[in-house]
Amino acid sequence: MKFIHTSDVHLGTWNAHPDLRDFSLKAFEQLVNTAINRQIDFIIIAGDFFDTSMPAVDIIRFAAAQLKRCKDAGISVYAIAGSHDFSPTGKTMLSVFDSAGLLINLHKKLIVDKKTQVQITGIEGLRIGLDKKTFEEFDFSSILENIDKNKFKIFVMHTAIREYCPIPMMEATPIDTIPKGFDYYATGHVHFIFDTFHEGWGQIAFPGSLFQVNFNELEKHDKAGFYIVHVENNKPTMEWVSVQLKKVFLVDIDGTDKSTTQIESEFIENIENSNLEDKIVLLKTKGKLKSGKASDINFSLITEKAIEKKAYCVKRSVHLTLEQTMENKVDITGMKDVEKEVLEKIIEKESIEKYSELIEQLLNALKEERLENEKNNVYEEKIKSNVMKALNI
Ligand SMILES: [Mn+2]
Image (cartoon, rainbow, N blue to C red; front, top):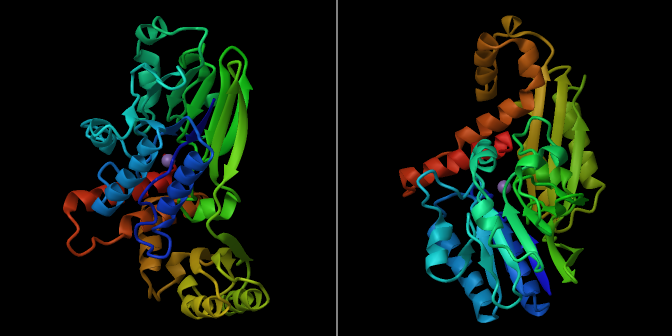
């Protein structure tokens, strides 16, 4: 018996980036192709199948078509909502697919897979650590007493586990509050690839996101994909399947004590001497500038040079500050400077420095404009989702 464990598919992510907005879809299509070609018994999606609780119609249509392919091939799909596709009113898009018979929402239910007799249950992910409370308060006995101990058992969840959480600040559920006695814990939420055997519990696995959902992940996660879990005599063995749609090329320039002209020429030199063909090019620079301001760097020119070298697309992350204080500075020419000045008035300078990356990510998350014809609630969800991503929750 073998099944696929994926999570954090985030269908519809990179919504505001036309060059990357199909990638989450392509990644999921590859997963379904693998499931069919490798004759997988069933698929588990451990939350965040969609990027928002109200995805756009083309995303819903795509998901329906792919889930239908699974159904036609006799592959059941089991899912829970995650922190992104959960809605406080319970109106997750998963319920629509559940009602249509295209997937099964596992939340607080014990399901026996007809083909393999595997027992599967799960708890959906909630926002900002509320899932921790669910684990503390939910009485699992109604599920546990109906379990056949001799058959393979899977627990699906969308939460970080305190003992294995890579980000210290992140809300996480202590392992003690997660019910014991399952053979496999299919988790999601932490966009981090990791698997281990935890004595007294069982095999725990985090597949990470199916495709990198932001600049930071493109930069730091050199792989994305999913697990095929092979089960023999109730023992799981992990097989990793990589999904790589494009290679990533990072140009990281330390901006410390440099002028913006210097930074610009270093970017160009690097680009001219590298093979960028069909790659996602990441331009990154941070540090305290000697002179100038970030907006002096001609990123359109740098991007043009990269496209001339056949780069697939160019994304950038710029965190440059000036040594001098705002009191001495009179020429506020860019929006960034205004934002910075306002921030300096309301919080201490040390905090701004410490959190400059987070602040910029939050500002970026909030500044996305409403598209023409975009409904208010869809736009609201998009902004919420951007903020969640920036805060890594
Ligand atoms: Mn996620």
